[in-house]
Length: 430
Image (cartoon, rainbow, N blue to C red; front, side):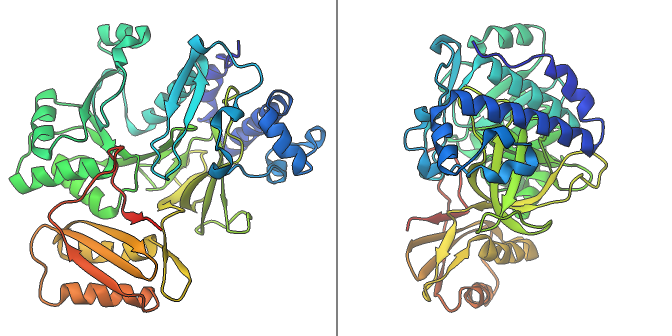
């Protein structure tokens, strides 16, 4: 049976209190061990790397990482092929299914030990935001298809008043969610960005002030400054962001001092690459590529997540030794096809909508929709009717960025979530 070396859990807390060089040394050692093990035990990766001419004997660590070909989602038509040759017995494995928000959902697996190891790392990282084991946590998400308390460890912790958590369905209407959470009185509120923002907007509309968490954690989808403003005002609490994927668990979390996203360096190596696969400079956007350092049953080595991010400095200006991301701009597939044949990433238009949304606060939410090339629809859910000429001004500003591609603005009375309970700022079906 494959076991994660638990003694490393004693190393990581001291590691994150040291300097950047210590973290990079740790990552180098873990990466060398990971690559050697994956090459010897995983048929899929061995074939992929051999085809790229990779020589495992000469691999030195992070400096040589670019010699390994990136792993893309289209290559994972049979995710089970990522499993090592002799995985542990199924009874000791934990299965997950990705949300499929990229249109490519698949099932993945980790050993029980890997799952626990990542959970502990995530908890330690979250302590940087003030999380404590005695806090009551409310989670707004898709109703779980399992019982959290079926796990003996969680039952034990709950009986001691630790790690208490309750799930609230993101499909519930905002008024119902507000009532339920007010009765629960959470210390921490967390959930999908737009779903939490919907509940926040309900509280603001009704003038309610009876949910006062210490802080709010959002994730699972892009959180705009407009959403963050609404959430902070409604719950009178700071709003922090977590960035994670089903495949590798936690990737980053908000730094309260700098406003950047700390990268979870003890468990992942993050690269930000341009369209030619070269590392981008600090402050530049690119595709996120991640390597999970502690996953061996189903490894993810140079996995292209499918998100567009902006690279930040390393280490963080706050003094922590972590690398950073400046922002998460959305999914790579959120590219709009313009009438002149070129493409434009959705965030360039979303930034214009954000500017208007923050200006006088008349927007609840907005969304870009494209169902055919050369035409873009902007859906706006207003708090109140826009001022004279505002809609026309928005369309003009947007069309200046779309090279004349027509933009139609439509005012709506609600926004739809997808089947996974998430909201997408851009919905492109072509």
